[in-house]
Amino acid sequence: MYRFLLSRQWVILTLVALLLIPTMIRLGIWQMHRYEERTARNQLVSDALSADAVPVERMTSPGHTVTTDERYRRVTAKGRFDTDDEVVVRRRTNSDDEVGYHVLTPFVLTDGKVLLVNRGWIPANGPSQTAFPKIPAPPGGEITVTGRLMPDETTAASGIKNLKGLPDRQIMLINSEQQAQRLDAQVLGGYIAQTSPEPKGDTPELLGPPGDEDAALNYAYAIQWWLFAAGVPIGWVVLVRRERRDRQAAEAEQTTAETEPAPV
Image (cartoon, rainbow, N blue to C red; front, side, top):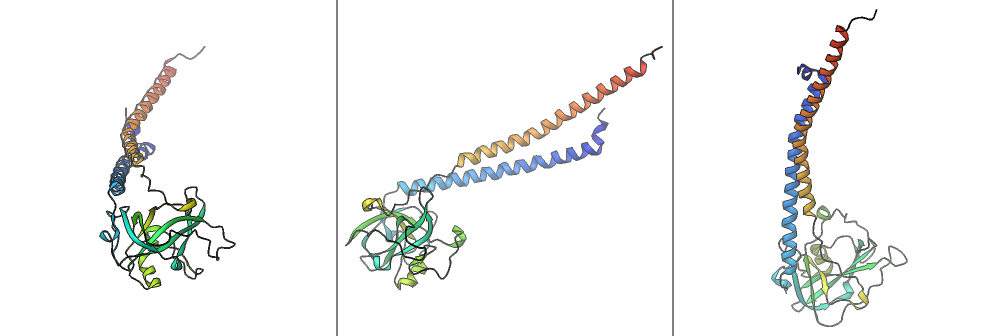
């Protein structure tokens, strides 16, 4: 009755089904791990953004590597902007995906150390890519800035190549070690994305807060893969029964045709 299962076609089909089941289960487990990772990251970001702002030197120091738990922490710093050593970060986009620059301005603290401040985005409206763009001036004198603490940018983490031979005062990556060498100063590890004071005329355009990763989508994918895994044996059984029914119907027709008397 089920001898057809030994045919080459059905052996291949059965083997494929047996391979698909564990593969889909593993894909579901992987998606669930991604869901857990993204949920944990979202919680870390939420906790960091909702925490009270603290003095920046409580979170970082010269040579310090900003950790995942420290990322996005709200910090404050008191000092003055040093626009003479200001640089721009090339090939950065704003919320509308327009390409321009990020403005990176050294902020000299009251004790002489330097904090790198990303003051936000400006358009690439200069006459050429080699010309230094016009940058709105920051507030003068001694002020207090607030921002989100960020780790140094690297090629490995960002995928951005740290190109050499760039025009003067233009960089590709925000890296405190490189800036410490350029400025010949004690630079705090990492940098901050400025959130206040807000710039006059809304430029530079302050960087928006990080968005939540869509963890729910990974959860849905995990359930989907597991449903697919459960559907494979069900589908195999349905196909086997259909094949058996079709073969029985064909055999019945053949038997009927053989037992009917020949026409005179």
